[in-house]
Each structure stands twice: as structure tokens, then as C-alpha cells.
View 1 (tube, rainbow, N blue to C red):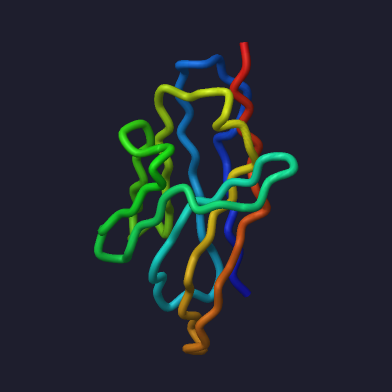
View 2: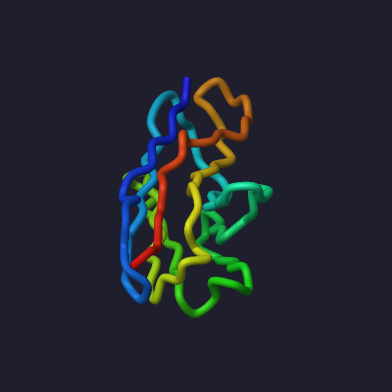
Length: 120
């Protein structure tokens, strides 16, 4: 069984920063693409940023230049550094990973989500 656990969310004022972490654990052989998604109340879940196992990144236009995604493959951990936060960044942020398990089965996993609230 594989688990993804996010941390680092919270309440921050506009213009502030937060750093999210996502740690993968369990019977993992390798992790392919990883990504951060978010879902605001009444809206669909959207891709915020993604990163390949080789380090290639993608950012949604709304966060480009403010957010930075990174990963530490040895620690099976992904990060999202969020700077210059805006009220519209308020959402539950979810970690996603394309995992090849020790059994060589490939599955898409999700974390439980962490709340980010940007408000004065």
C-alpha cells in the first residue's frame, strides 16, 4: 500500500509565503510524475504544477512566477514553494503521484489534502 501525506498548509496574509510538502511511503519501486492540484469551494480541481522524475516542470498560468515545484527523489518527497500569495489561491491543495509499486503495478495516488487560506 502507498500513502501520500501533505503538510504545510495554513492561514497566511496576502503577499505571504507557504511551503507545502508531500511525502510518499509504502511499497514503492519508483515514482514517475508528481503534481500539486487545488480545489476551491464550488470549483473543479485544477492542476497547479507538476514535475517529472527527471525534474521537468509545468506551471498553471495563474501561479507561474510565484510558485516553485521541486522534489527529492531519495526522500520520496515533493515540495511547493508558494510566494506572493493571493486570496484567489485559497483552496485545498492535493498531492498526486504516478507510482510504480514494488509489485510493478502502476497506480495514481492522491493525498488527503491540506488547506491553504490567504486572507487578511
